[in-house]
Picture 1 (tube, rainbow, N blue to C red):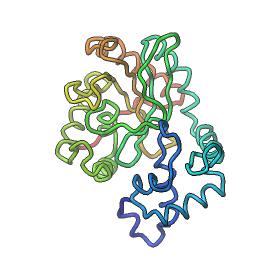
Picture 2: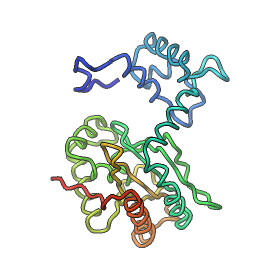
Picture 3: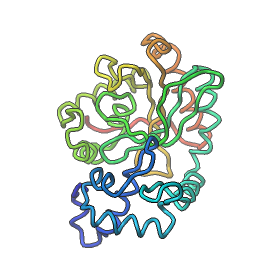
Picture 4: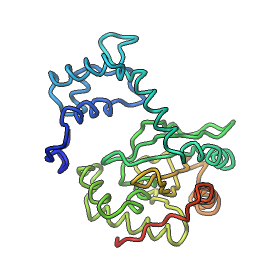
Length: 270
């Protein structure tokens, strides 16, 4: 578990942080996790993980429903997720808008948030009657080499940007210099075009093209990012710039109008 400045504060509850790091270790593709795998992913000692998983399972946040040697997210987490979605108003309001954008463009629409040193997919809208790329809720994207990551770097405050780069710990070669370059380029795209497209030549996955637009909700202290993605054969650079990017931008602007907010574009030194 990464030690942060906050963890040195006397108010910081280390045991709680460790328990949450166990929950964050799970990925949608997992067929359950054993204590050894959780220990490897979190960096926590196996003895500590054993106590945490027992406690979390007792409280319903983890379950042994199918195989008693492997843990899975439990019903209490599902309840928390539903409460969070209902409490953050823009999530429900964005649904019909992003589904329409997905259907009109034939792309997978995504909602992503910053998850320490990664960008976490929290919602997807798949186009009707069209096969789409494999990204799912819970998948973490890198800051470096993804349109979602570059848009997030551009939209974060200076404090949030510095924290994100530190949390990334050099993932995919990200350092402050390369992060600031991506931040400046993405910010310029937001000003001139209204959306962000990471250079496909350095994209983290060669079989994905994507375009992103950040959004700042009054419900959250940090921006989130809406993205449309598809395979390169279905989503060329010309199509991203001429069709999908503008439609995604229009969808985000519509959401801002519904919420009574003006267009979001951070004003900070980059």
